Length: 359
Ligand SMILES: *Cc1c(COP(=O)(O)O)cnc(C)c1O
Image (cartoon, protein in one colour):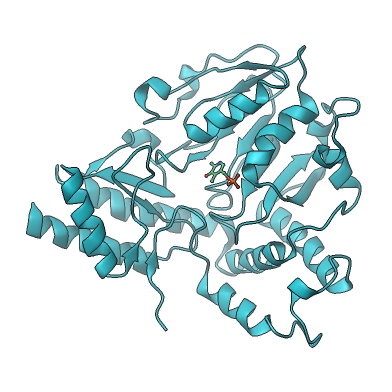
């Protein structure tokens, strides 16, 4: 058996330790003679996992009083609609910073429910940057300020939370959740599809604060899209296998030193790649330097032919899924928490060697 160096943007690499653990429990979970996938979601075994995962998540983020954790389905894309459905109407306005395709999609959905003001958009710059606080033209009484902390496709990332005029932040953190600490006091909601940095596809983590719930409209419908429905009890069958795996990924993060430790390692991994890119003109980073992502490193070579050669030769060295998103082209190395230093070092030495031969 061999494991490749996996730079997939999502569903992305998972820690080998976690996969092994899952493998050992697949036929017989804790002496029950069946896997966790084959038990009731109301069984004591699964209930314990569900509860523990929520508690571990809060602990990793130092979340204080008032934070609720939900494990929902429908992907981050469902949250694009669920958030405004619960709190926006035609009398209210939400601010949405537009820094890429995912923000654009979130804006489209919010407009079905209420007023949307866009305090900043980098669309005319092909989303190559995120705003500084001075760039933001915020509205006065926004119900919330929505931003996408890391732009998976364009390779940009907010270096810190944007300024907000006191409006609570609502964040799509799908591609950098738990890659670094966050200033939770400023958030109302933080949500993330698990398949980038947290686990397998199928579960969306939604952290929502009691403060934010005060904004919820009297009786939003339909039932399954109301946050209250899921806060009261486990309303329907959660994605048990995904939550079970996320629970082990959370253990793994905490064993490795938690989000602060990952922030450092991720910074180091990204620096290795950006240093290689910046060495000369052979590789060209696509994002503005101050906006560069530590999760998705995007770059181009001098021609599409050379990029195709790069991808092919990389794959021959087991460096896989490095192709950029179809809307951007070029190369994208996604280096989430589970992509280890050794994979990044192997990629950097391949890049160095490729430049020596083709430059
Ligand atoms: C992948 C991604 C999404 C879409 O997530 P789904 O779970 O497929 O709906 C949304 N936002 C960001 C930032 C992403 O990276």
